[in-house]
Length: 182
Image 1 (cartoon, rainbow, N blue to C red):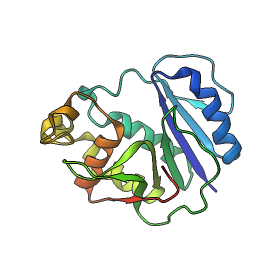
Image 2: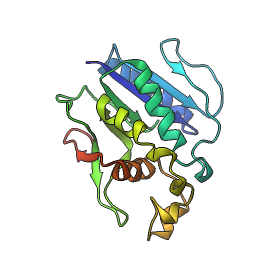
Image 3: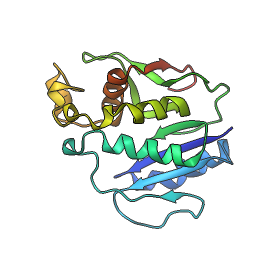
Image 4: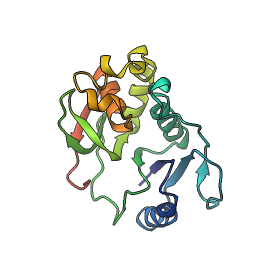
């Protein structure tokens, strides 16, 4: 399977080595790209693309865009954005072919989203989302007008999955539940 994993690392550094080892065990030929906020020592088989606070509201969907760009550049067919606390137990038995993103679908007041710890997608879905320009929408700079609409508690915390879901809705890209992702 041609799989690219991307992971932002802001904290939970103590988990990263174990999680990378688990990803390698489940997907030995995968591409792994890590986006750390601070430089450090990383395994040689991991691509490192340092970022600086791209999760801030003022950056809109830039962090999502960086993850998707790394995936597209990898040449892989499937993408997974995982958090440092996401545990890979085994490879998935089925990966979709259609143009959509997948994971643990959750309903929200501002619309459905994928739980941000593990978001998957096809190459076609990633390319469509990048081409749509939704991740650069000025609305993302105003959470109450976009991804945190009518939910004041969400405005206090930026989450990759919520920005991603809003951009997918704006671009008309479907989000689906995947029974193997919890």
